[in-house]
Image (cartoon, rainbow, N blue to C red; front, side):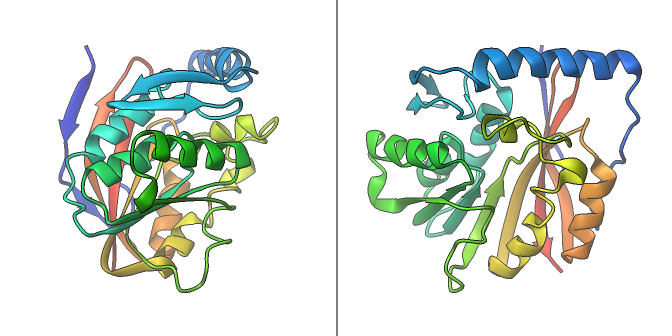
Length: 246
């Protein structure tokens, strides 16, 4: 049975360190990626599914929230936040499921961002399908780089790729963040610049990620980290952190 735990520990970086993975874990992770990439991420057909209470169209190359537990876990957490009147940015939106969860939690307006143009289009269509198109805008952008300088947010949410390594293609960027997490490393500095006073960042990370590197990036961006939720699955834990500007 999956174990979900609410957490309250506060630290300046993350509350845990990178754990070296034994060979069998690395081999298992490689096998999971192989099948996930070829059977899900690389698929050629558009599909329709339901997840977290939303009807979602999933175009080819877009992260599928029914097959990867991270999306529904994070959406459930967002649903418990009080986002009434908040301006929210969802970085790496994929299908738009987290952005839609933010609107359902009361967000005034959500900007959904993804480097994959198919994902940005998918998120926009899913917002309209679920009746939230008036409070939703989707942008194809490398993190926050394409947004207007005046765009500021009360809450920024992100479920970035959990693992380093060069992605094979645009679909694989949902899994691999480049060597040394090249594609997501600027996220924390950019979020710090775009966060309104008193704002918060919520991001999800795997216990198998390079937590030492994420800690260093968080400290460099002058954030204080607090673990707020964790879900244990068979081979890893999924951890959601809240970041507050120092």
